[in-house]
Image: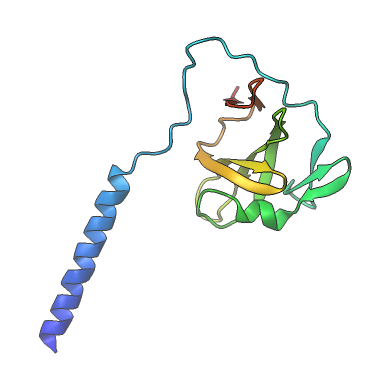
Length: 152
């Protein structure tokens, strides 16, 4: 019986060590790139989308009607943390791809920033960003292949 307990503890220690090494070696997604040529951005503020919510802006409206509900926005958040969500900025590409710059507020840790990408009410991508990276706005380039975030 004692051997089983010792083997169990050793197995847990090995798993914990491997998990710790994997977390350190995993590189975060690259969120900043320097284009080789000037990039012209499309004004992300001119569109028919708006945010709405009771306390926090957690839904997206299109021409005054709900386009993305709060539950869909929460479910697509790319960083695995609990807590309420607030949409900070919206950008729309010419092809209709929607970028939501948003924050999640876990109860015991700092806010988590992220970008969610949507096409026809379907999440098509997303990535975490450090808080404050889009305080000044978000915008797509003209062909929608790049998304820029701005901070003050």
